[in-house]
Image 1: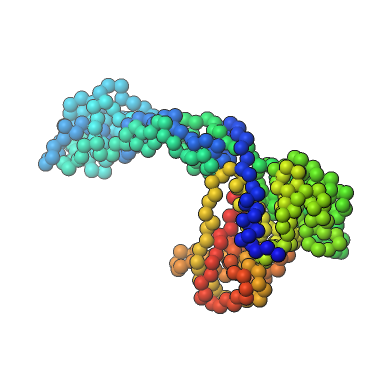
Image 2: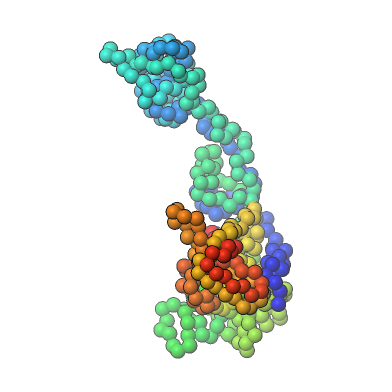
Length: 403
């Protein structure tokens, strides 16, 4: 049995990032990984503009020690512009984002001005030259690299790319991931259950996790415990996909056939990992694809996916690795483990704003109790060897991230 850290290290060493590049419309690029740095096609902002609602004036018309009266000659909303320069003694009503008129070099905010009975704008002393003016290129200069290669694009990134004038970007091809479930006792949802049968929650959970990650999914369906059927479906996955994920069939029972077929049809690098949940696993290569054989218990399969498979797929996507979100938090309650494996206890971190964050378990931790996973937003990571937790103990917490 291999340690968790050694297992993950071996998995990551087998991953080769995808190098195929395609042009992707910015509107469709959420979750995609940049294959080249994104550069600004224009200055952002692309013109000098007002940072405040107020009045555009010439600084030389103002006084350092007394109010000055000016004539307001126009209103200038965002998106409009003044076609003639601002003259002596003139001001323009200007909105946030509106272009700065020629001759204007100072914005006076509307809250500080007053009006004379005759309609003159009175500007108090104490203004500064160039105040409240955003210069062209102040945020981003034309030609500047704004997002690096390897960036997984989020919603704000799409807005940023659009603001740069970009319509499409170069991205790595999405990984193709084949997914299947195995087991004579497993049936599709909607089928009346017979004694001893369970619904295929594994494939549903993992398909959702893969969708959150943003890969192309090849759903190979549900396969019975039959050597030929499993051999045929794994051969298809190894031919069509970059990675194959199966659930079930990797333990030591007479009907646990995945590991046996993998040995005959591909390569197996290791199986059995010193972790809980998720000890029975099989990793290797199947045709041109990496193979991830996950446990059949629904919680175990999803935990192993998050801790072992997801980092490998992110690496395969060509994305720059992100550090794990690990916290040290006080534990509430009590928990005891007697086994020697590394334990990933499903937990809930509470951020209520009134006191410091803390963590507790989600309750019973059986590997078939999906509610324990549904409630969890974190794993309480317990090291190898026996551990006894009591109220107030500080623990390591790994926040769960599906995306």
